[in-house]
Length: 365
Image (cartoon, rainbow, N blue to C red; front, side):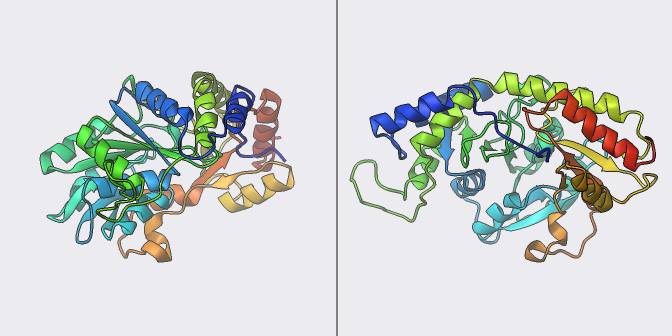
């Protein structure tokens, strides 16, 4: 079975993790946590970075730090992983779902503008599947309406928007380092910001809101959202190879695009002229003129040894966040999208095999 994702841990991961074990610094204290934070801040051109236990806690902590709570609304894309909306709900605020734009599959700034009310406090754009959002348009809307922007760059390590790294935009930005991400710590996340007050506030809340001057004194309720030294050691080793991973993913995307170009009924992953897509997942759309449905194609590929994943379900169609409104672009993309094998360990021969199966199943072989 050719997997959808598989981490590459052949750098300094074992060396750094062994150092943690030998030294005894295995929990949230230790040199690797700070080194990982500093390297992420440098990568994104941010003043501050704060490691967290996962990407969802990073989003939740960012929202709480900005004072988002009951009675507030936060606009998020419907086409994303459910964690983005869940983090809003954790605060007591209400996630409001925006549609996608059809060309690059990202949150549609026009849809965002139509959803703003006097209760709206923030926008969370998501760099879906490794392609950047049109951040200039989102930031312009936010400025006109006095809204916070939290960039969810969980899937976009190393991606660029007009030459600037994803994770460098908005009031705060968040990453995930789950096992299938471009770089991984197994589980883990990161908040980045240029605002010292917000950084200090997030630091406090991340550690049960324990006073910096009086140990075990907690003036308010905080969270245990810390990252361990062992996880940070993995992350630091992974960061050392980020550009290598990005180049491999972009090379694999070129190979997929070249080979899929002759397969009718398949729309390959897009890349805007102003973007560097890192193709966290190499994604395709199954068009109406392909002879199999999306789900039938996925089932047939699995029988032939190719693992795939469907696109995220549009969040507004699921029971936990059900809304009555229609978001036609997001719904259409969610119904047609497939993520193909996208690991940095993927070989050219495996890509050839995957595409050959899609072509044969489509009557081209």
